[in-house]
Amino acid sequence: MNGTLVKNQLIFDYASGSLGLSKSIFASTYLYLNSQAKELNNKFENIMGENLFSNEDIPMSKLSYSDCIKNKSSLEKKQLIKDNSPIAKLVGPIEQLNWKQVYKGFKEFTPKISDDDELKLIKMDPGSSVPLHSHGGKEYILVLSGSFCDEYGEYNKGDIQINDQKIKHTPIACKEEGCICLTITEKEVIFFGKYGSFLNLFTFIRSFFK
View 1 (cartoon, rainbow, N blue to C red):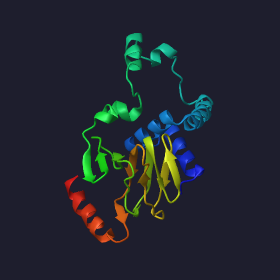
View 2 (view 1 turned 180 degrees about the vertical axis):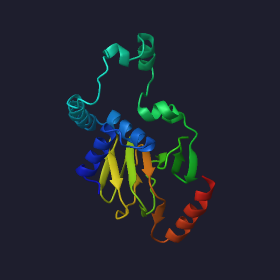
View 3 (view 1 turned 30 degrees about the horizontal axis):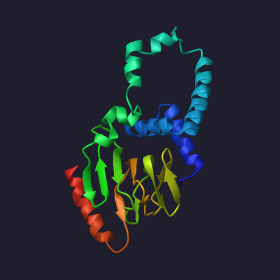
View 4 (view 1 turned 60 degrees about the horizontal axis):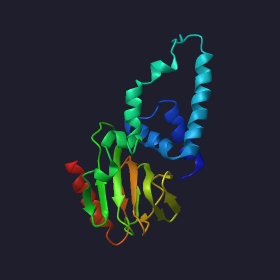
């Protein structure tokens, strides 16, 4: 499911304003990190903008560019921020987060937002891995730093992976620097293999304490 069509659909849905909060943050961060995705988003927005102009039922507001930006001092202050990505604006500097360790080599941070989808940041130590698993719904992964690989390829900063319940994979963080990813899971993780039953029970019990 991790094809161009699925990624383009995410960008199109973002450009049309049809995504929920978690997926909007995910998509906007993707556009911030990936220039090709940003260019495609601009094309979608231009197409929709042309359709808006051709609709005589919608009155157009007389706006200038200065009406759409803050004052100069605000812009200068913005430029001083090291990481100006959408997710960093929400949670602050990624490197200073209060990470929660789930198991050895794997940490996570959950932003406090109200949405049906579960948005998380995950941090994997160099060489660490997640056991073979799939999901009840879609899983979205965006690499913020470092890289990881699985049965389907290698993913570096600015790359996304979108999986459905048919996909089983074993993500492994790169040995040099590990990886930090922004993720969305629509349903709980389903583990397989030797410790699958134990891990699924652990995930089930853990869901009561969210």
